[in-house]
Amino acid sequence: HVEAVVFDLDGVITDTAYYHYLAWGKIAEELDIPFNPSVNENLKGVSRQESLRIILDHGGKEDKFSKNEMEKLARQKNEYYKEMIQELTPEDVLPGIMELITEIKNENIPLGVASASKNAPTVLRALEIDHLFEYCADASRMKRSKPDPEIFLTVCEALEARPGHSIGIEDARVGIEAIKKAGMYAVGVGKNLEEADLTWKSTEYLSWTSIKNRFLTKN
Ligand code: B16
Ligand code: MG
Image 1 (cartoon, rainbow, N blue to C red):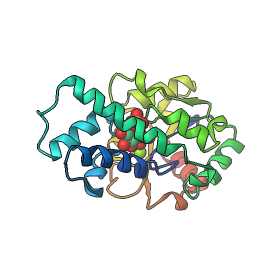
Image 2 (cartoon, rainbow, N blue to C red):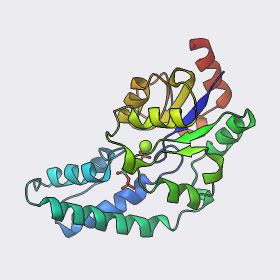
Image 3 (cartoon, protein in one colour):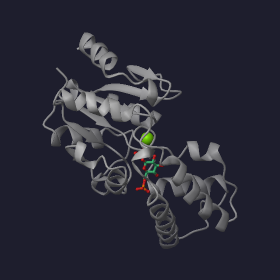
């Protein structure tokens, strides 16, 4: 019996990575730092402050800004980002995800969201799927970011589910590591996720029957 299924947001439920990319791109341009999709790959699942550090590092400007200035840059990025995500609609839920959520809900299994994004509740509302999740972690209250298991453990606890009887779904390596460290069953979506118990090339191939069967034979 599966006690809970915990979803990552960006890259699993929707592709907000694209908007993070555009928003950071504006900041990088203002700072005259080269920015491209491969730098953006390193920002997946990483917190806002840490993302800024990676970008400054990439431009060789890691020690050019004070703590205050860095906070201001991160705030500015978030302003750009918040404006962009206003355009999200239910059509931006990635292929296969609505079907997957519906099948899990039909079995009365509680659903949670473990996203590093402080904007996660806004994104879920814009996609009109917030009511389908019993719990969404508050990223601002996490002490440690992924690959630390804190966020996944917090969601399991809120859902009164034992991690060893729960499933996590992630698209980032750090996320898979966090799920495994939490003692949960890890489902990966995308490339380079060898640590996952089960991986799919993209969300459209996710099948609840296969996930459940694989999970139940392992447990
Ligand atoms: P925010 P996830 C992560 O979402 C993104 O992948 C990452 O690029 C972003 O920096 C982070 O959220 C923080 O987002 O600036 O909105 O607080 O994959 O953990 O759902
Ligand atoms: Mg992600």
